[in-house]
Amino acid sequence: MHLAVLLLVSALSGATLALDNGEMRVPPMGWLAWERFRCDIDCAHDPKNCISEDLFIDMADRLSEDGWRELGYVYVNIDDCWSSMKRDEKGRLQADPKRFPGGIHKLARYMHDRGLKLGLYGDLGTHTCGGYPGTTLDKIELDAQTLADWEVDMFKFDGCYSNATEQAKGYPLMSKALNATGRPIGYSCSWPAYQGGLPPKVNYTQLGEICNLWRNYGDIQDSWDSVLNIIDWFFENQEVLAPAAGPGKWNDPDMLIAGDFGLSMDQSRAQMALWAIMAAPLFMSNDLRTISSGARSILQNKMAISINQDAMGIQGRRIVKEKNGIDVSWRPLSNNASALVFFSRRNDMPYRYQTTLGKLNYTAGSYKIYDVFTEKTTTLKDTTGFVVSVNPTGVVMWHVSAPAKRNLRQFYKGGRLQGFAFGNDDENVVPHAFL
Ligand code: GLA
Image (cartoon, rainbow, N blue to C red):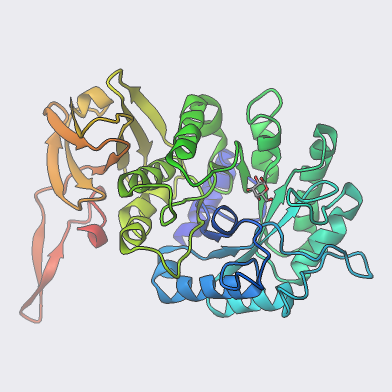
């Protein structure tokens, strides 16, 4: 009921015009093979890590058994190097028969049986980036139909080996072709990344109408340098990028790499926090079979996820860039709440950053603060000076809401104390789950 009203309101307001497939009203979450497993097809020597159906089955098992699915991580996405080098006798794409003996359709069924979804990769052009068969303009309808026949739920359409003219035709055509199959398939477009990510070459209004998400920028690698480079590009271009995002249409700064080899725990928290602030898709690319408990708890942080998944779908922005190396980013959330991230670019030691909520544009009043990673709460007035200690290349992340009013009352049922309840007029409380 609520959802229906929300959809109606957003449809009427026209403010959230997006690809009309009803998909991805909040940023999609799941797992994607590429950054961690690349194009390892050497199953003879590396059976556990090669791109094969076993790998995706393993990840699906981990997502459904280790608490990920319940948090929203539902996509299991195959990337490049899944297909046979040849199309079949009817011209259709087909999976490599040795590495995917059951085929893609069976894998999709495996996901669906577990409440998960399957994503697949293709490429507009003669070849994929890894040299596998691509989708030329004449093959778009056929390939869209094949995806639907296989019950695929999401499609990443890369852009290697095509030129700007072909891309301008192919990306909208694929959008139409996917819609025409009648199967809702989330559509991820790499188009802007191939055109420099910025207007006038990139038309974000059009992208929002034809794609559910899009890669704007280069590939993430397993290093802090790479993450920082992406952070910088997205925040430097936020005036162009933030207005493009909304329910059903998201900027994609690429995968989460917490749990791999390149990031410290502080850097992993920084990536998670800033991806949440940016309303970015949350696709992990790591090995869920061996992930450390530290990385797992960062990626499974409920408040960071709920900030990322906020229903208004407004992409946050950097609001302060201090000379001392501290950046502050802010994202407005439903129910007059918001999120703040204090991010340190420093390399020396924890920095004690002093400010007030008033200086960060909060209006007069008293606010409830929930620290996303330490889980501590406190109350602050807009005028109260406070200090946050931010580790080098790390973050402090806050959920900020109006405090519970003083009508907090205990309630009794059958004479026994049941718990606490807030008055009905009180919308701006920290979600109870997080207290
Ligand atoms: C491009 C994409 C990556 C990945 C590879 C696969 O580089 O940007 O995300 O899909 O191709 O070859």
